[in-house]
Image (cartoon, rainbow, N blue to C red; front, side, top):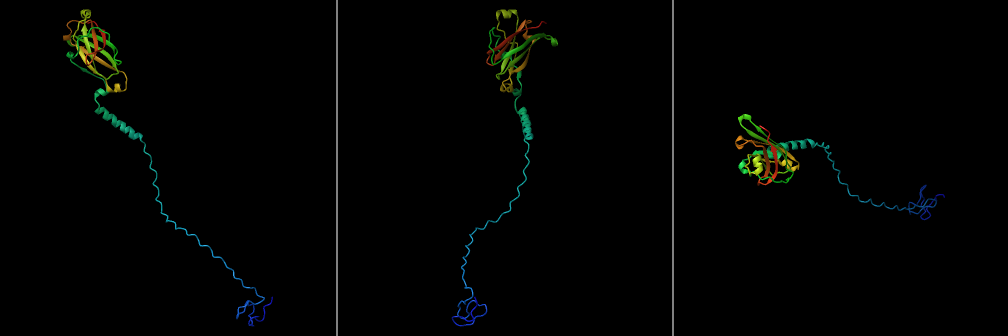
Length: 233
């Protein structure tokens, strides 16, 4: 459609290509009608809280090498063994054999049966006469076994046929006290102790034919006994 030469309302002559009258504002025929397009406003952006500032992390220390505990354990055991050896009494490690006076030992008891008390036993009894040093002595030795801690007394009674026949209650000629070690008792193991007794010539009025070896408790109770024949002069 051609553009009109004058405005139909006011008669104003429009400019070439004008879409509306510059005087009255009338849309001119032959020109596209102006359209007002409402563009919806964009929705507001959601509020995002500000992120906290990022702190720089400290670098992790390198892992420490694990120390072996074998060396420390060996050192502790070594030090403990030294302390134990110094602090503990000798009776803890080994049985102790000490001399005691014969006046503390009962007279020779009459022959009787004795019970085996706590594994106590006498092995390898022997007796022999010796003239060493120009004096006549009687040497008696036994091996005593026990797993008990209670001390015992080993007593020797030289006897001859007359004493044995009449059952004389003779005094002891020699005696020793045996205390077994604590270590053997804690381990519940049998401990063998060599006991050697020397009967001086003053206690031998006559050459004995045999000896009676009696094991007493400290209270004087007979625990074990045995007899050994004395070797010839």
